[in-house]
Image 1 (cartoon, rainbow, N blue to C red):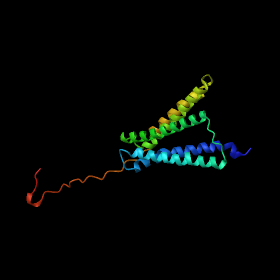
Image 2 (spheres, rainbow, N blue to C red; image 1 turned 90 degrees about the vertical axis):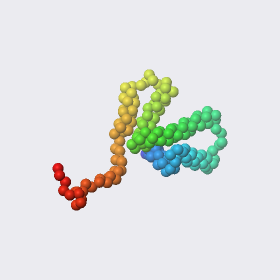
Image 3 (cartoon, one colour; image 1 turned 135 degrees about the vertical axis):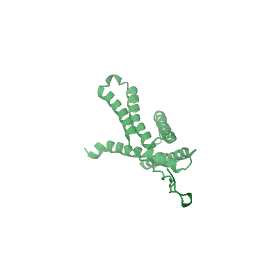
Length: 190
């Protein structure tokens, strides 16, 4: 068996870890780069949509044409895929709202904090929902429960103890120099 095909799922999963790990940082930078404190996040989200169109509409469309795919889209697959896309887009919008609120609350390193919470919490939601859908709760073992708590604790610890850059030092205030008495005042008595 080809080792590449055996581990391709892991390579793609790690690619997602990398790209989604960078997503929050660049989304925050894009929002701030709009230089619009009122509508910057919506402007950034608009270009997230453009990016989704380019990568999630045009690219698969080109691949389907190149592969000669049929244009049959069963209703179940169509609606579930559409719903998944809506969830993803709403999630991206919530990321922007969270980043904006964290900045407003003066949370240091907002992208790091927000994304740590998201990436620690999302696998927990995924595990609970997928187990519920499969009705596999009777098969749960203690290491799984421990893993859920560890994921939550890990998200908390990464958020709480992430190194934070010190704010730039403010310029020192000019201290009025105390000068000895001027010659016309005469000697000072104590």
